[in-house]
Length: 231
Image: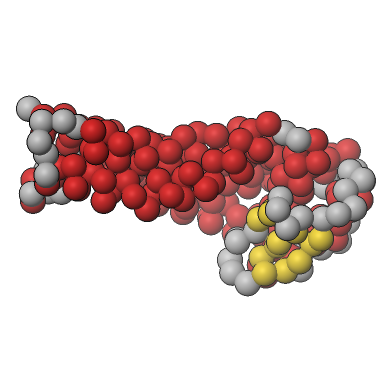
Protein backbone atom coordinates (compact mmCIF):
# COMPACT_ATOMS: atom_id res chain seq x y z
CA UNK A 1 0.00 0.00 0.00
CA UNK A 2 2.69 2.54 -0.87
CA UNK A 3 0.09 5.00 -2.15
CA UNK A 4 -1.23 5.35 1.37
CA UNK A 5 1.97 7.08 2.43
CA UNK A 6 3.39 8.59 -0.77
CA UNK A 7 0.77 10.73 -2.47
CA UNK A 8 -0.28 14.35 -2.73
CA UNK A 9 -1.85 14.36 0.76
CA UNK A 10 1.66 14.25 2.18
CA UNK A 11 1.78 17.99 1.51
CA UNK A 12 -0.50 18.39 4.52
CA UNK A 13 2.15 16.85 6.76
CA UNK A 14 4.82 19.07 5.24
CA UNK A 15 2.69 22.16 5.88
CA UNK A 16 2.18 21.08 9.49
CA UNK A 17 5.91 20.52 9.98
CA UNK A 18 6.73 23.93 8.50
CA UNK A 19 4.18 25.71 10.70
CA UNK A 20 5.48 23.95 13.81
CA UNK A 21 9.09 24.73 12.87
CA UNK A 22 8.24 28.40 12.37
CA UNK A 23 6.44 28.59 15.72
CA UNK A 24 9.36 26.91 17.49
CA UNK A 25 11.84 29.26 15.85
CA UNK A 26 9.72 32.28 16.74
CA UNK A 27 9.43 31.45 20.43
CA UNK A 28 13.16 30.74 20.65
CA UNK A 29 14.12 34.00 18.94
CA UNK A 30 11.64 36.02 21.00
CA UNK A 31 12.78 34.41 24.23
CA UNK A 32 16.45 35.05 23.39
CA UNK A 33 15.71 38.69 22.59
CA UNK A 34 14.20 39.46 25.99
CA UNK A 35 16.45 37.05 27.80
CA UNK A 36 19.03 39.79 27.48
CA UNK A 37 16.84 42.21 29.45
CA UNK A 38 17.37 42.00 33.21
CA UNK A 39 14.29 43.01 35.20
CA UNK A 40 14.71 46.26 37.07
CA UNK A 41 13.71 44.80 40.44
CA UNK A 42 16.50 42.23 40.25
CA UNK A 43 14.18 39.27 40.83
CA UNK A 44 15.07 35.71 39.86
CA UNK A 45 12.35 33.82 38.03
CA UNK A 46 12.14 31.23 40.79
CA UNK A 47 11.70 34.01 43.38
CA UNK A 48 8.87 35.52 41.34
CA UNK A 49 7.20 32.11 41.12
CA UNK A 50 7.28 31.71 44.90
CA UNK A 51 6.02 35.29 45.34
CA UNK A 52 3.06 34.67 43.03
CA UNK A 53 2.17 31.40 44.76
CA UNK A 54 2.36 33.10 48.14
CA UNK A 55 0.17 36.00 47.05
CA UNK A 56 -2.36 33.52 45.62
CA UNK A 57 -2.36 31.69 48.98
CA UNK A 58 -1.18 28.49 47.31
CA UNK A 59 0.76 26.67 50.02
CA UNK A 60 0.76 23.11 48.69
CA UNK A 61 2.75 23.72 45.50
CA UNK A 62 6.53 23.38 45.45
CA UNK A 63 8.97 25.08 43.08
CA UNK A 64 11.87 23.05 41.75
CA UNK A 65 14.51 23.21 39.03
CA UNK A 66 14.66 20.60 36.29
CA UNK A 67 17.02 19.84 33.45
CA UNK A 68 16.36 20.88 29.89
CA UNK A 69 15.77 24.01 27.86
CA UNK A 70 12.33 25.62 28.31
CA UNK A 71 10.95 22.40 29.80
CA UNK A 72 8.99 24.39 32.37
CA UNK A 73 5.72 22.88 33.51
CA UNK A 74 3.17 22.60 36.28
CA UNK A 75 2.00 19.15 37.42
CA UNK A 76 -1.41 19.25 39.07
CA UNK A 77 -1.04 15.68 40.37
CA UNK A 78 2.26 16.16 42.18
CA UNK A 79 1.59 19.84 42.98
CA UNK A 80 5.01 20.74 41.63
CA UNK A 81 5.97 23.75 39.55
CA UNK A 82 9.14 22.87 37.64
CA UNK A 83 11.36 25.53 36.09
CA UNK A 84 14.07 24.68 33.60
CA UNK A 85 17.69 25.49 34.26
CA UNK A 86 17.53 28.27 31.70
CA UNK A 87 14.62 29.92 33.49
CA UNK A 88 14.90 29.18 37.21
CA UNK A 89 17.90 31.29 38.19
CA UNK A 90 17.58 33.87 35.44
CA UNK A 91 16.79 37.52 36.15
CA UNK A 92 15.53 38.15 32.62
CA UNK A 93 12.10 39.41 31.63
CA UNK A 94 11.67 36.31 29.47
CA UNK A 95 12.30 33.94 32.36
CA UNK A 96 9.96 35.79 34.69
CA UNK A 97 7.22 35.69 32.08
CA UNK A 98 7.60 31.92 31.70
CA UNK A 99 7.68 31.33 35.46
CA UNK A 100 4.55 33.47 35.93
CA UNK A 101 2.81 31.51 33.17
CA UNK A 102 3.38 28.24 35.02
CA UNK A 103 2.07 29.89 38.18
CA UNK A 104 -1.01 30.71 36.13
CA UNK A 105 -1.60 26.98 35.78
CA UNK A 106 -1.24 26.52 39.54
CA UNK A 107 -3.85 29.22 40.09
CA UNK A 108 -6.12 27.53 37.55
CA UNK A 109 -5.72 24.29 39.47
CA UNK A 110 -6.58 25.94 42.78
CA UNK A 111 -9.70 27.54 41.31
CA UNK A 112 -10.82 24.37 39.54
CA UNK A 113 -10.56 25.91 36.06
CA UNK A 114 -12.77 23.66 33.91
CA UNK A 115 -10.60 23.43 30.74
CA UNK A 116 -7.58 22.43 32.86
CA UNK A 117 -9.60 19.66 34.51
CA UNK A 118 -10.89 18.50 31.13
CA UNK A 119 -7.37 18.41 29.68
CA UNK A 120 -6.12 16.34 32.59
CA UNK A 121 -9.06 13.94 32.21
CA UNK A 122 -8.28 13.49 28.51
CA UNK A 123 -4.64 12.46 29.01
CA UNK A 124 -5.18 8.68 29.53
CA UNK A 125 -7.53 8.41 26.54
CA UNK A 126 -5.24 10.50 24.34
CA UNK A 127 -2.18 8.41 25.22
CA UNK A 128 -4.06 5.18 24.52
CA UNK A 129 -5.54 6.53 21.29
CA UNK A 130 -2.14 7.67 20.05
CA UNK A 131 -0.77 4.14 20.49
CA UNK A 132 -3.53 2.25 18.71
CA UNK A 133 -4.78 4.72 16.06
CA UNK A 134 -2.28 3.98 13.29
CA UNK A 135 -2.28 0.17 13.86
CA UNK A 136 -6.09 0.18 13.65
CA UNK A 137 -6.05 2.23 10.45
CA UNK A 138 -3.42 -0.02 8.85
CA UNK A 139 -5.21 -3.22 9.83
CA UNK A 140 -8.51 -1.82 8.59
CA UNK A 141 -6.95 -0.75 5.30
CA UNK A 142 -5.00 -3.97 4.66
CA UNK A 143 -7.86 -6.29 5.52
CA UNK A 144 -10.61 -4.04 4.15
CA UNK A 145 -13.76 -6.13 3.74
CA UNK A 146 -16.47 -3.67 2.82
CA UNK A 147 -16.78 -2.03 6.23
CA UNK A 148 -14.73 0.95 7.38
CA UNK A 149 -15.23 0.16 11.07
CA UNK A 150 -11.57 -0.33 12.03
CA UNK A 151 -10.39 2.58 9.91
CA UNK A 152 -13.05 4.87 11.37
CA UNK A 153 -12.17 3.73 14.86
CA UNK A 154 -8.49 4.41 14.20
CA UNK A 155 -9.23 7.88 12.85
CA UNK A 156 -11.46 8.57 15.86
CA UNK A 157 -8.64 7.55 18.20
CA UNK A 158 -6.23 9.81 16.34
CA UNK A 159 -8.81 12.59 16.57
CA UNK A 160 -8.42 12.54 20.34
CA UNK A 161 -4.98 14.09 19.87
CA UNK A 162 -6.51 16.98 17.98
CA UNK A 163 -9.21 17.34 20.63
CA UNK A 164 -6.51 17.51 23.30
CA UNK A 165 -4.69 20.24 21.36
CA UNK A 166 -7.92 22.24 21.05
CA UNK A 167 -8.68 21.95 24.78
CA UNK A 168 -5.09 23.00 25.51
CA UNK A 169 -5.49 26.36 23.78
CA UNK A 170 -7.80 28.08 26.31
CA UNK A 171 -5.76 26.57 29.15
CA UNK A 172 -2.55 28.14 27.87
CA UNK A 173 -4.08 31.47 26.84
CA UNK A 174 -5.78 31.84 30.21
CA UNK A 175 -2.58 31.01 32.10
CA UNK A 176 -0.74 33.74 30.19
CA UNK A 177 -3.47 36.29 30.92
CA UNK A 178 -3.32 35.40 34.60
CA UNK A 179 0.47 35.67 34.54
CA UNK A 180 0.50 39.16 33.04
CA UNK A 181 -2.23 40.34 35.42
CA UNK A 182 -0.42 39.14 38.53
CA UNK A 183 2.93 40.53 37.35
CA UNK A 184 1.28 43.92 36.94
CA UNK A 185 -0.55 43.67 40.26
CA UNK A 186 2.49 42.82 42.37
CA UNK A 187 4.71 45.13 40.29
CA UNK A 188 7.30 42.43 39.66
CA UNK A 189 7.67 43.99 36.22
CA UNK A 190 7.08 47.61 35.19
CA UNK A 191 4.93 48.61 32.21
CA UNK A 192 7.76 48.41 29.69
CA UNK A 193 8.84 45.00 30.94
CA UNK A 194 5.24 43.75 30.87
CA UNK A 195 5.08 44.52 27.16
CA UNK A 196 8.20 42.40 26.66
CA UNK A 197 6.82 39.55 28.77
CA UNK A 198 3.56 39.67 26.79
CA UNK A 199 5.50 39.23 23.55
CA UNK A 200 7.28 36.19 24.98
CA UNK A 201 4.03 34.60 26.15
CA UNK A 202 2.30 35.39 22.86
CA UNK A 203 5.11 33.66 20.98
CA UNK A 204 4.80 30.68 23.32
CA UNK A 205 1.04 30.53 22.70
CA UNK A 206 1.66 30.30 18.97
CA UNK A 207 3.46 26.99 19.48
CA UNK A 208 0.22 25.53 20.86
CA UNK A 209 -1.75 26.95 17.95
CA UNK A 210 0.78 25.44 15.55
CA UNK A 211 0.50 22.06 17.29
CA UNK A 212 -3.29 22.15 16.93
CA UNK A 213 -3.05 23.05 13.23
CA UNK A 214 -0.48 20.32 12.58
CA UNK A 215 -2.68 17.77 14.36
CA UNK A 216 -5.72 18.88 12.33
CA UNK A 217 -3.78 18.52 9.07
CA UNK A 218 -2.68 15.01 10.03
CA UNK A 219 -6.27 14.11 10.86
CA UNK A 220 -7.48 15.58 7.58
CA UNK A 221 -4.91 13.53 5.68
CA UNK A 222 -6.14 10.32 7.27
CA UNK A 223 -9.74 11.18 6.40
CA UNK A 224 -8.78 11.93 2.78
CA UNK A 225 -6.79 8.70 2.50
CA UNK A 226 -9.66 6.66 3.87
CA UNK A 227 -12.08 8.35 1.48
CA UNK A 228 -9.77 7.55 -1.43
CA UNK A 229 -9.66 3.93 -0.39
CA UNK A 230 -13.45 3.67 -0.32
CA UNK A 231 -13.50 5.07 -3.84
